[in-house]
Image (cartoon, rainbow, N blue to C red):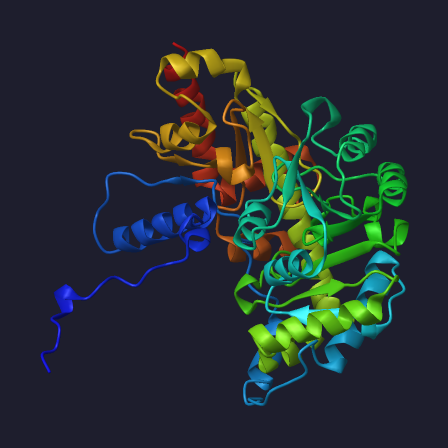
Amino acid sequence: MEMSKPEDRKTPAIEPYVDSIAMPENLKVGIMIAEARAKCSTISCPFDYHAFAFGQSPFPVPEPLVQALKDSAALGHYSAAEGIEQLRVAIADFNKRHFGIDVEPGRIVVGPGTKSLIHDVFFILQGGVIIPSPSWIGYFPQVKLMSKHFHTLPLRPENGYRIDPDQLDHFVSRLHAEQHILVLNNPHNPTGAVYTEQHLRAIAEVARKHNILIVADEIYALSTYEFDRFVSMAKIYPEGTFVTNGLSKDRSAGGYRLGYVVLPENGWERLADAFRKVAATVFTNTATPIQYAAVKAFQPNETIERYFEATRGIHRAMGTYLSKAFAEIEGLEVTMPEGGFYFFVNFNGIKDALRKKGVSDSNSLAHALLSHPYHFAAVTGDACLLDPDDYGARIAFVDYDGAAALEAWLASPPSGPDERARFVEKHAPRMVEGIATLKHWVKDMVG
């Protein structure tokens, strides 16, 4: 029998619904910049990037969590699909201490990252998904991957890019499904907006009226600058809210891939069983050593509490300084972040000038910013679920040495606006330089 030559064999066919999914823009740009900087560490490069695209916490993982992972490294056995009991108990206690949520451990499901659990919520529940726009880069590709019906709900600048309860009421009234799924990201990626309790209550009223289940993505909750202002949607609408959270942002452990979902009060036993079945089918269990290490991250710990307070303060200093500076650039409208490490820049004021320069839509905006000699990396267009005619960009303000900044802040926290400004200028020089670059870019586009 004659064997076929390798060059004669067909390329494996890929399902169209997978082939149509693009690599997330923030990851693609982040990898490109990381590779360029690694290369430039060994050879001389003529320029560096202003890296405002990739939203990864710059700080080191808290030492108690690092030590706990070392201590659990030998635990190689399989574990429960929904998460080990010790961890779910610790998470329940953590939510009580920090968010005032009374939740029994049975309502908590652990997974390999919050992203995977949001996917599982969409996969398990019936009904179309309502995604506010602009939004985090990850919701839409997940919905697309499972061919699930979805709707985009435009957020308005005049409402601070928060969901308008009256708009939501009118929007859902035109839909015909018996059950709806609303994504509520608080604090909001990409604008940094935080919802008040009154605002959440108004949204909950609409949710009850229209049988809307809410996926409350609260991964940035502990990064709310005025933390006593943060209110979890689970306190307002416990019967219909899925809260997702994890270690990626506030404990800077994105690579650990450890997240959890708090199930709503209504029907949680059946929901927990559904999550167990999906987990057992797809990934068996979240990595056992990571789970045992994470117990430490959720138990009372003075070092980690100081870490929360310090990193929250640094994020606030960076976001305030940069958003104010960007807002001073003529033609731009900029959100003032209240939590997390993003803000949003609206370029629509100079849209006509951009079009004359060949920036034909919001997707083209990212390429124009990244072009030589500017090398300004940001997330725009489809990556934020923006309409092609909506020229906006997400700015992630994390491009600095987080270990050095954290050490300096813990040793001597800056006490006023002037000291905080000097702190930013000292510890985040690349981002400060990015202000001048963006100003130069706008001048070149408009002039």
